[in-house]
Image 1 (cartoon, helix red, strand yellow):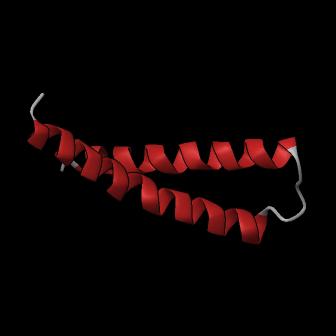
Image 2 (cartoon, helix red, strand yellow):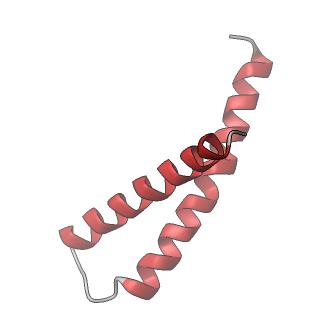
Image 3 (tube, one colour):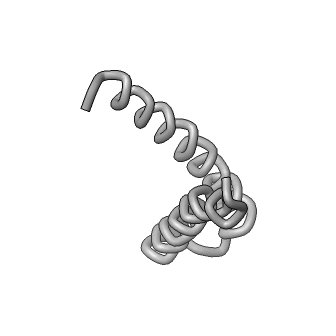
Length: 64
């Protein structure tokens, strides 16, 4: 793998996980206030995985 391939992958990683992390934090702060401890951690993890899957699967479904 060349340096260009690595930097391209790193850029894609940053562009896809940054907004997912921000959106997860925003939703958790607004909608999951009643949870605390382990249930909150699991809900945040499940939400982040769902959003990350959406980021990757929507372009695939659209044929991009």
